Length: 242
Image 1 (cartoon, rainbow, N blue to C red):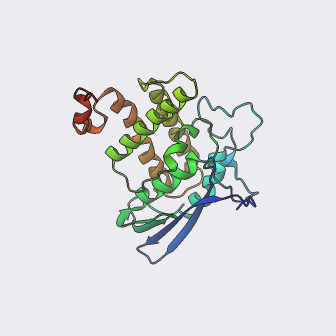
Image 2: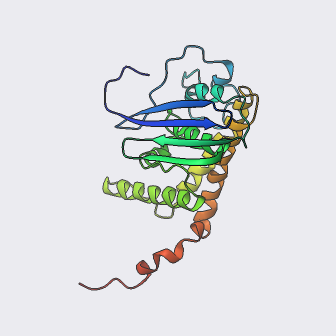
Image 3: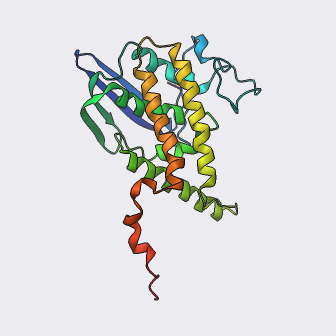
């Protein structure tokens, strides 16, 4: 890990496989900006190079960056699970400073989607940085409705923050659609990258799960955001006069 001695956020992932294997990863993030604390690795195989199946519209192109920061930070996890199949059944626990989450008998792809999502968002990709506030309230094993609720709530709080700082807010959530369209393109390219690093499909389909969510958010903005409108009925009444 980095030698930075500043306070860090820790997420300890413990995978227990049916064949009695156990694999643990500790994700360390800086406490101020939730930046992934990169593991020192000088290998950086060809599939981590920025131009290798680079995302369309990559914001790091022509900046002098030689390796995709997301790919670099994913490589140890991807290699550890390169021979695992999506639907292998595992038990997974995630330990944080506040609490421990655990779930038994889930698919490998579901477990990997959680850890890959955290690393991708915190690795320094400018297009993924917009999701960093969600990492602060990471909810493993979230349902689609919970994920949509968190994404839209996070974005609206971001607009409130912009307004407080004298910037133009986007209350229509139009830009959130653009953010998730960019993320969709990143997920597609990342899946292509990972094909060069894996033998089986667990990591690939973990990113596919993340991409399914990226596609659902813009649809929810235009539609029923998970069918949750009815929960807000108290706010649809006239505001009581004090």
